[in-house]
Amino acid sequence: MKQKKIFQFIIAACFIIFNTSAAQNFDDLKEDDNCVSCHSDMEIMPEGFLPDNIHMQKGLSCSGCHGGDPATDDMEISMSEDNGFIGVPDRADIPGMCGKCHSNIEFMRTFRPQIQTDQVSQYFTSMHGIKLKEGDENVAECASCHTAHSILPAKDPRSTIYPVNIPETCNKCHGDQELMSNYNIEATQYKEYSKSVHGIALLENKDAGAPACNDCHGNHGAMPPEITSISHVCGTCHVNNMNLFESSDMAKGFSQLDYHACEQCHGYHNIQEPGDFMIGDNEESVCTDCHFEDDEGMQVAVSIKNILTDFVSVYDTAEAKLHTVQVKGMNDLEIEYLLKEARQKLIESRTAIHSFDPAKVKEISKAGVELTQKAIKDADSEMDEYYTRREGFIFASVALLVFGIAIFLRIRLISKDKG
Amino acid sequence: MNRRKFINGIMGIGGLGTLGAAVYPVLEYLVPPESAEPNVSSLKIGKFSDFEMNSSKIVKFGRIPVIVVKDEKGMMHALAATCTHLDCIVQYRKDAKQIYCACHNGVYDIKGRNLSGPPPKPLEQYAVKIIDDEIIIKSQKS
Image (cartoon, rainbow over all chains, first blue to last red):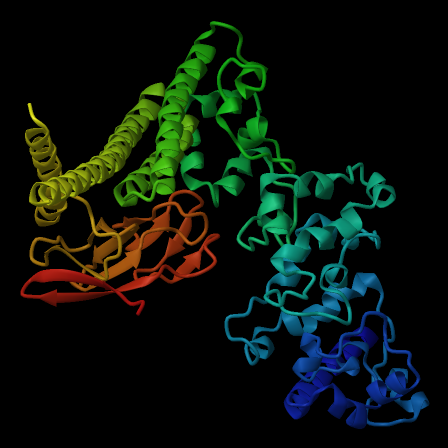
């Protein structure tokens, strides 16, 4: 009953504060809000407090979460239970406390009409939420990821949930070996991820479109993906790879053996940039994990590898010729365009590997090889033109020189005759 | 052969060579080799009446592949066909009436706005004009 009253008070406080002081900034609050004025004067503001955090920006001050009456400077009254003061909330109460506003669509839509309000219900389906409900207060709750006093929207690069910052945020707990040992989880995910193709794209190249932890595990409902859902998780971005794999015979075999679809060949946190070295009968090939020399699967792998090797070989030749054409200052327009199209075919051929059907790979790569050969022909023609021009220049220079000398000699002869 | 004849001979050969060196570039200018214009600012891509509704084609606009779409209302759209994520060439999906990139499932709307997936920004737009049933696309860069 008492708890209910506290929450009713929080909601009322939220409404009052949001409606009356939406335009106030932190400096205004210092004058009007006794929580802010006393705590800042006494220099006991919470650790990591950010004056322009999203709640402060929208006018939600301390009492919005902690209760109490900011209107009076009498500490006994302002921080009394009668005024709904809860102080530092228990971790177990935090999702409910945030949810009082964030699960209320009527309230939240006044700030952003398209905002989601299912975070708390999703959270309690996550491993974090399940464990918290069971009484484990070491697991992450809202403030663990969003912080308590420096909450910023996901689009703000300073935010702990800005895509580029998410791996670091998760790593605060998941990189703690001691904490993770309680759950039989390794603490190496961040280390592995940061060296992966996704990690490099996100953390080094700052490609905010590259997947962070939440893109595969979910946000508020974070869970490890199940075996059956892995290809769907990867398939949200690698859609063609997923479709080809799922309609292949390989998918049936994987299913029978309880293999983890994409993860079986590519790994998970430490996914490296894929390459043609991954297929065939060479040492680095992932095919050799299950297939042996001359079995039917290995023959398919070798056949696909050969198709790709041939394509790459001719493509590399064309790229080298394009470079020469560019260095010589000749017209590279058509060649560059053809190679752009050929590169697309190369990507498609590599994607088609996931059909495990050499005929499909061959069909696409054949078109790519034709484009590449045309580019080579054009490059050769440009280089022929370059040498023709050079030889022409030499010929013209020699002809002019000879003509000049002949004129000189002729003039001298005429002068001699006259003399 | 006396000296005079020898000098006349050399003068003839030199003169012919010089004439050839002067005439050849003129001929090359008058009959240029087949090669595309490197910097185009507008391009005719075919007849509007021949372009099917809800279909697309990719054309070469200088160095840039441009995807031209005729939507189901008959409106023409022209956009750079290179995905803003990792430079793959995008395609038009007739069923979804959207433009998508097969590499990482980036989706754009018909106006090139990035809707979902990794693309960080929209596709560059090109102006489309129909003059005497002829579709002309034009770069909007000055």
